[in-house]
Length: 280
Image 1 (cartoon, rainbow, N blue to C red):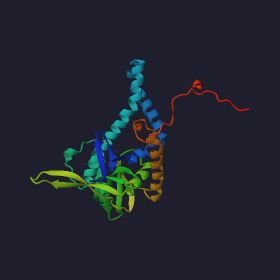
Image 2 (cartoon, rainbow, N blue to C red; image 1 turned 90 degrees about the vertical axis):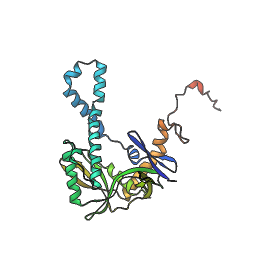
Image 3 (cartoon, rainbow, N blue to C red; image 1 turned 180 degrees about the vertical axis):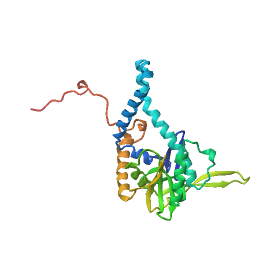
Image 4 (cartoon, rainbow, N blue to C red; image 1 turned 45 degrees about the vertical axis):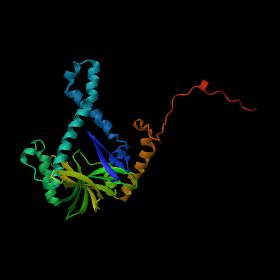
């Protein structure tokens, strides 16, 4: 019986190890404070208000507030959809697949063509893509974008990013993937009647010489080294400890866990606590 599994749930996924759910790498890193997002949300809301001033002025106050509250999510959703589409096409290119011209929309063509040139320049040959993996010692899971070999860099762990920048937490993410020890490999099986199906088989996580990001943009793709080393992995493990000892145990969604922690109790009142006589 396989020890490790990834389960898909509509737009999300989860990981289990030895039959127990384990947190994902991005979930653990999510405990980091991201103050820049506050400024971004304010700017997006202000921009939406400026662009739709006349339309908003005609709405009831409650409707106007609701529209403004949701405005930033529409911008973020568009970026996520575009990023997911570029990511899916990039994975096909990474595997060496020829993509028919009709499969690439004009909007995405500059992104994909730039990434294709990037793969040729660095002469990447893929080892594995979209590999679910986990640490059996530290009990976390994740899915690595790709492992590849390059005559210039050796074996690399490659992460694809399509946002405006590459941020420090990416190093934590790649260090966690790098030092995982158990992965899943997609294997095609042929049935007795010739039918084909894909099954996941456990395998070692490929060893790598370095960790890098392919930053895919409309004007081209850049290769960015990140510090996914043992020191960074140790920092990630501290975060995993905080997540497990506090964040998970105090999360309302995990209140039924045997070790759930209710950090803040209900109010108490003087009448519930009789006064104690103080010995003279």
